[in-house]
Image 1 (tube, helix red, strand yellow):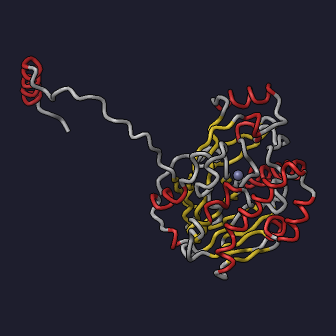
Image 2 (cartoon, helix red, strand yellow; image 1 turned 180 degrees about the horizontal axis):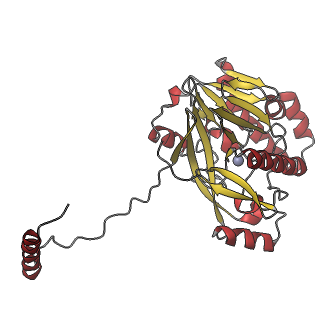
Image 3 (cartoon, protein in one colour; image 1 turned 120 degrees about the horizontal axis):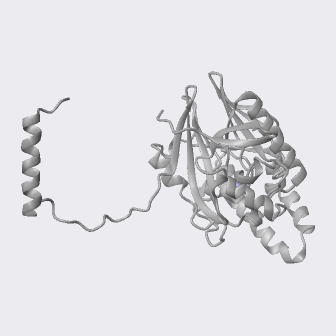
Length: 334
Ligand SMILES: [Zn+2]
């Protein structure tokens, strides 16, 4: 639209007069800084809606996460990603609405274990779920990648189920290792004396999270790479824990794999998949699964969604110049 010259001139005269008279808007102090951050991110996968939910970001020294990384690997990995040590580590979960079922993959920390530095400040998932337009009662299915506290802590609020209408489905190998009382007793008997009380309290903690679902008849374990609801399939990726499982989400020719803790520190592990995390129960198997997932995703142009890749943790992995690279999702509005 073109503004006629005469009007433009009149406006300039009024403005100049106002400035000269000092009667423009009175000066204001700086606006307060809200210092909050949206904690959900949304994309469509075919007709499925995928919502990444952030549970928190915790500052972590890289050498504690990846104890076998050399100083040189840490330095070059961080500088390539523009990061400094300690790194803000994201805690992510993913909500998939297939149009028929609302599926939550992992549940965050639930704000539990907040006294431990590695979980302090997490527990935001429920608020972010609501901010994303969902209520906990709308979740039909919960699938667990593994029984890490940052993945199952949010299953309960107090002693109640946090998702009162959901079926909780968990890989059998995880259930056998962490929840079976006989197996847990055997593991504890082999645990060094000094670590035993802490290990026992961890097993008790895990059981307290699952018990409300078991009592309500809303718990099921599953074995193998099965289809859980149309469009969502389990994919065994054992290594990080004995039954660690990823979930393949497919619709209209698009595929996304929710990979839990296959990757903990993207800034180093895409370039060097052999680098294990301090939490890998079987570092060799975990590294093999990392490579397998990277190759599968890169070869087929699948999306990946990671439990600890910088929020929203969704993107593609590419193979170039003899190594893998992370390519984060482009921001979109569904
Ligand atoms: Zn984790």
